[in-house]
Length: 363
Picture (cartoon, rainbow, N blue to C red):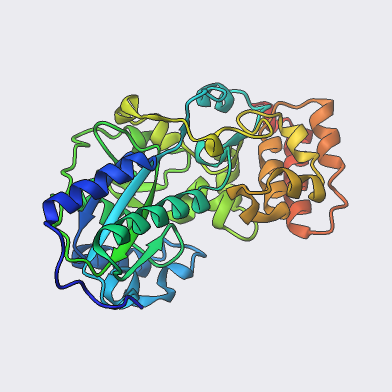
């Protein structure tokens, strides 16, 4: 629980400027401040949940209104400091489109090529909170990076860090969308920034580019159709209707961001933790499929990929191999997994082999 709100603060404009300056020094691309009114976003969330568009993500509704009412989650909260940090590697990984257009390679969403961002952002936000404490004295706060029921995109929008685009990701005119978000809930009564205005206009590039038509209307995403959901959050068998459209995407999907015109302004990052590891920016599917569990655990140590487990990793790659051009190496790799102890893996391997036996994968 947050302790108690501060009755007296240093001159707030100067304090906010110090918070921004410190945030930039800690590697954040932008810092914004907002209040805690999310009534409109709460209504949209409830409608989304009622339509079942969250799929198997039961945690999206488990906490009730605490997700959209910060003071219910952390009593005493009156302000939120929102921060974003760019993640696109400074030393370019293999070009995303080149990988997507080569069905022999596995595509991993660019945010997951390096180390897991959660710890790095949480540590930097904690350092920011420590600096504020040194400036104003003890105050109540909690740091969040995907670690609690928080409407982070809505808070970031209200804090002026960008608008929520038609693909439901946060966008900024000068930074695109390749960034992570984090928050500090606080009892400090800080002046709020002006919410960002939307600039998608008539563009529908993200809607047209989605391989599985998951963007069912502007600003509306059905997670059950989204490749990021299917490859990461979905626990069981991937519905066959989406498997061919998945192509070679084995962890997440970036298509809606890759086609977004605003990402021509996206910033790169010099953070070493976000640099690609183990050739995950464009390794062959057969090589990745050959990693046994111990190898996979070793090579995903400290990575966001670790959360899906080895079984989902193999499941996803089996689908990609079913979409790859037929050759002896691909068929051999698939057959080597037919005796896997998990039926989910076997079922997807059988599907992939059937596509090669019928020639469907080569069409």
